[in-house]
Image (cartoon, rainbow, N blue to C red; front, side, top):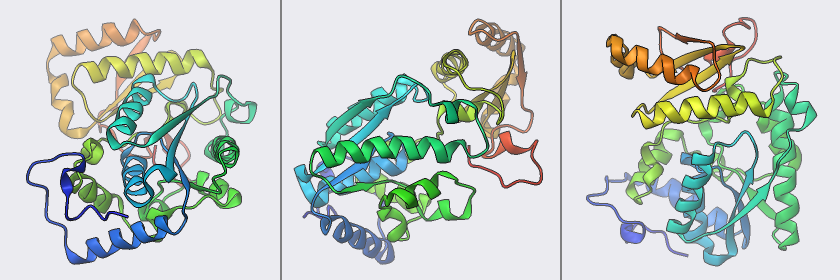
Length: 294
């Protein structure tokens, strides 16, 4: 088991940030907890948390740790490609499970959609892990997730999925600091949620809607935007852009270009959310219900 604190060049970074004693202790606790499991499979989406967890699992267990990604219509292709590249960089075996259809309970898009989705996806990951004689599946939920509306956490509890980042009491901010310390390129990656989160609850999810959103978001990404969502309200694409990036739309030529390109993805109208992107924006129509970080 290698803590990594004496050698931050495993991934490679110049002038890594200093880690305070309290955070180092949390990391050592995390490393010890994972090492005690002997063999683990990490549910790997390619995001900040699961990427860090893959790194730590590899540091703790070497080849006795694997990463599993469920490839579904709700996972953008660029996220899959980034996850695969990062797994190679970390040196962890990366297992892909193809899921071509959208489950009916998920497709109807109820408010508990994440519960049904997590129950299915982690169920198939458990099956794959056990086929490889691995008893423990880890997920990357962190301490901050407990303060939010996360119906998917109930599914993890029912399936007995282990959440070591929460057990180590690591927050998202601390995970970013540690990720930067160890040279993970995901340390400053913007928050991300699956493509289904772009469609209002109660509106049916299908592959065509997901494809339109994915194509529109790929365009914004290629234009250099970092934090954004394309919310699909029927024929309307409502763009949520990080507040600090909204100034780009003060240029009429930019607005015209964005409008034309988003419409070419299959939308009839393009609207801009004036307040910009914020977690939970899709839940404003349900004022009496808890918000979700999507």
